[in-house]
Amino acid sequence: MEIKNLTVASKEDKKLILSNISFDIEEKSIYIIIGPNGSGKSTLAYSLMGVPRFQIVSGQIIFKGKDITNLSMDKRAKMGLTLAFQEPAYFEGITVSNFLKANKKNISHAEIKKVLSLVGLEAEEFLDRTMDQHLSGGERKRIELASVIIMKPKLMILDEPDSGLDVIIYREFYNILENIKQETKASILLITHREELGLVANQATFLNHGQVIYSGNFKQVMRRYCQTTSRKKVCPHAK
Image 1 (cartoon, one colour):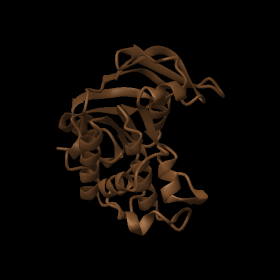
Image 2 (image 1 turned 90 degrees about the horizontal axis):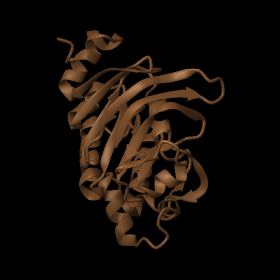
Image 3 (image 1 turned 90 degrees about the vertical axis):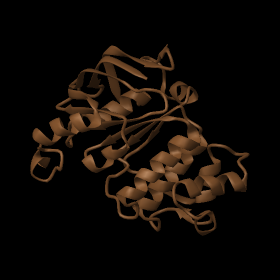
Image 4 (image 1 turned 135 degrees about the vertical axis):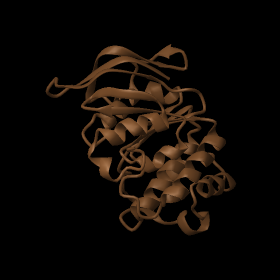
């Protein structure tokens, strides 16, 4: 994907949220967008997916060589673009099995078992459970990732999947991302404000106040991020 000078506003009040955002995501890579809360990271994720509450004022989004700037969300999804939201939804009365089958009705039990294994879950323990508040936040995040894998995307956008982690520890999360990349051959755009996740990244962009501060090698990006935010005192890359 190529993002070229992307400027985005809220459709509701026309306020600019992102200004002249540019970066490229290489095929089969993991790319991180990092920045403090309120920097525009989620707006960027939703805009790339085509969520209609945001308006692209100018710029282009090129995906697989095609300009998708004005395409609807469903057309982007059909091209292989997917988005996993920061807070996975609850589905009262729907089992994990039926939730996963919603994306591929003819999926076999063996395929479901394999996909759940990729995200660190035992199929026999979870398939008959309900997608409700009895699942922990970490378990719901894993199940949502499993549902994304089933779609066989070309590019996965993961909006702060590390937010409020309780079950998934960081090292295990690294392994899950690598498993997903190897299984799907997809690129992954990871939205986060935590430098700990950067170990999996090929490249990164530091976003703040709706603007690109720095893009490039992850360690270089992290050094800039740590020097200019409130994380300076605790960030290992600050020096």
